[in-house]
Figure 1 (tube, rainbow, N blue to C red):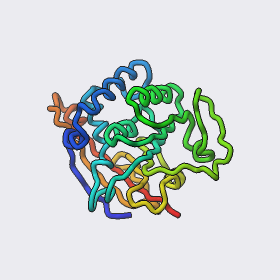
Figure 2: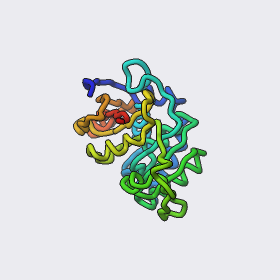
Figure 3: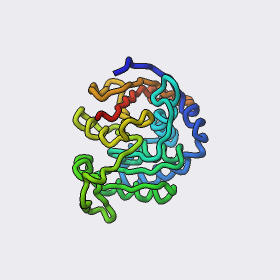
Figure 4: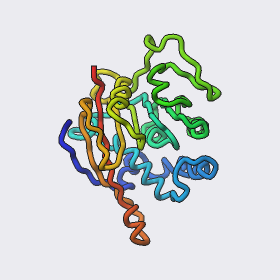
Amino acid sequence: MQENNFKEFTVNTVLDKFGGRDRFSGYVEFLLEENTRVNLVSRETSPEDLYGLVADCLIPAYMEGPNELFPERNWTRILDIGSGGGLPSIPLALALGNVELTLIERTGKKAMFLRRALQKFGIKGKVLNCNFREFADNPTILTVTGELSLGTDPASSKPTYDIVTIRWVKADSAMIRKAANFLRPSNETSGLVYYSSSQDIVSNTLAHSFYTYRLESEEAPKDATAQESSSLERTISVFKHKQ
């Protein structure tokens, strides 16, 4: 594993690289509306909080170039494990444009939300209403009506992805290893991106690098509690495919 690096960002700086807040405003509004019916994020989450979460999700795409998370970004297929409200997969798809998503979500109501989101924003992809273990054991699983149906020969048609994302799902070394096996082999632009708190870094022989970063909101805090929430400290760990 490479030495930890520390970065500082602001929400607007990250969003501006991908077209600014307007590019993500529809998703923020849709997520807040759907959140009144399905528990996708905390009910206390404000629009400003969501823009911060969107910016947080975009850090791997933002950090492109020499000495960054990825030397270059050429992503067309993304696998997101534990998609929930679509963070980070939907912001990444909105930012990058021509990508295809495979979203794994075990909760039926959240899976239905994700299907509606893909349709609403014209994002290519599919939602698998299963857990990661079911997918890893049979990656040709398809879900059309919420039921699992098995493919004919998983071993002969195992899908591969440019990026695999795991955000706020507790992942141990075994899960990281299994998930990283879905990466395109021998591809420097690909990697498994594990989003976590700054104290929760997975030590693993697959680890390639990790960055701890602080994401500041430009919104002026109104009190001490807001001051604490206006600055988020996170860690992103990147893992590579291991033959």
